[in-house]
Image (cartoon, rainbow, N blue to C red):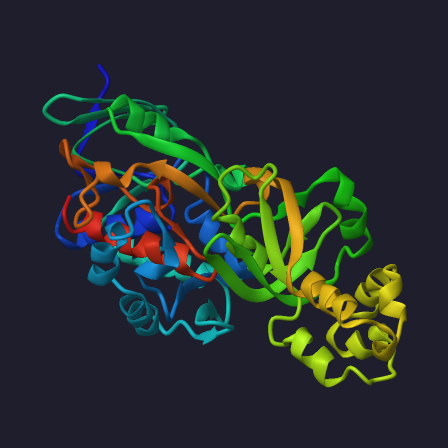
Length: 394
């Protein structure tokens, strides 16, 4: 006869959101189990931020999240904010620093965050099982979970299985499949915070500039970000590009605009310096790397002096640099994407508890939900906040 192990709460997924939910459930005296299908806990935490984990952002607020229902994230973020998580790591003596734009990283290693979470799980008697493949989940009065490590039963079930990004560390579609089984709507998924690929006809330019980093403003529709861009042999990457990628839905034929001189107004400067005898290339040299200037000088106008060019020609150069158009043909897929956009439709969930409104004992948290944070610690904050909400209400 197969033994069934009974728990108050079972959490499927041992990442940031799942561990936070487990800690909160355990803290409330719930007999809690975490099932992780890989052989490591918190692997995405470990590899993030170059191994130092960009664990939150000082400026995290609802405006930093992409969600069809912009009000959905408010309750969870208010219930457990970046300041709450900062207090937690400070209580464990984990040193950290702000890098740029409010991004907080460990001074040491991301493993310190993982160890802190494991210590808390241990303190609240949370059971954790690794290499556990869930074969089936059914529900009558309680949830029955069949796995390669045996059968488990619980009154509440929390799905924290993540999205499709970075399959090398075990990403899967488990959460979406389970959601469909229980009748939830899923919004189409796509890679987010991902490098972009340009059209074949433009590829040679990007290959030639591969490795060049440049401060710019990347825009798509109403969204824009001021940070570095990085030319790659396939197209574009860098913080500003990763940010804007989350707003693209089709990736094929869509156009983004780069302002390559966001802190300047070339038209005004050209008017002021119309009698400057410098070549345009020399005039612009302070703003660009030599490799970039070599590319720009393919245009003969860049080899003319300002005095030799008519106003219309100078303004055309200004327009080219302030509105550098890039046609996108694709992205570097879930292999390179930091997160997954789309997922569980937030209209199906309670914003206060993260529970499925039709089945209040079933919760979805973290990346599996259709909430996508900006680059810079916002997605980890969503994991902490949504995990906290579910763990406090399961």
